[in-house]
Length: 265
Image (cartoon, rainbow, N blue to C red; front, side, top):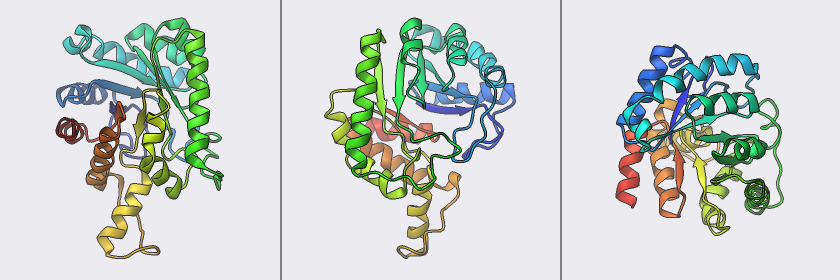
C-alpha cells in the first residue's frame, strides 16, 4: 500500500503532493514501483494535527482519485485505490470517484463500507490526533489492541462489509515501547484469523532507533533521524511483518518495500 498524502502538513512529505499535478504524478509513480494499493489521504493524522473540514479534505483527494482511477492498472483491477479518511462523506465521494477500500483510522466507518460494498481497514487509535500521544497507557497493549480490532472486524462482517483488515495503529496513541511490542508480536494479530494491515513506514520510533544506531549509544542518545532517513528501518520492519503473515504493509518507500516483499515471499 503506497502512501499518497495530499496534505500541506504530512509528517513525512510535508506539502510535496498537495498540488494536483504532483499528487497524480506521485500516484502514478507508486503504481509503477509495484504497489498493489494507492492510499490517498487528504487530512494529516500525525500527532498534534489539526482537523480539516470534510469539504477541504474532499477537495484535495477526489480529483486525484478520479484521475488515477483511469490508469490502466487501476481500470484492470490489478491496482486498487484506498481512501485514508475518518469521515463518512469523504469515503462516499472517494468510492464514487474510484476507490474500493476505506482505510479508516477511526475504526468507525464499517457501516459506510458495508453500504458502499467496499473493503475496510479498521485501525486502532486512542483519542484523536490532537490528543493520542498524551501519555498513552495500556496494561497489555498487544491483547488490548487485538481485542478491540477483533470486535470491530466482527461488527463489520455482521454489517455486510465484504473485505476487512485490522491495523494495530502503530504510532497512534502508543509509546515507542508499545509500537515495538505490537510489531514484535504481530503474529498474535495474525493468529486472530483476520487479515492484518500495518503502517510502520518512517514513524518516529524508527527515527529514535536509527538515531541510537547512528550515535552508537543507547537510551539518552536517541535524537531521531528525520523521516526521509528512515528507509532502511522501514523496510526492515516491513520485511518482518511480511514474514510473520501481515497482508498489507503501508509504505512511503514503495520500490524498496515491494522488492523486500518479493524476497521475503
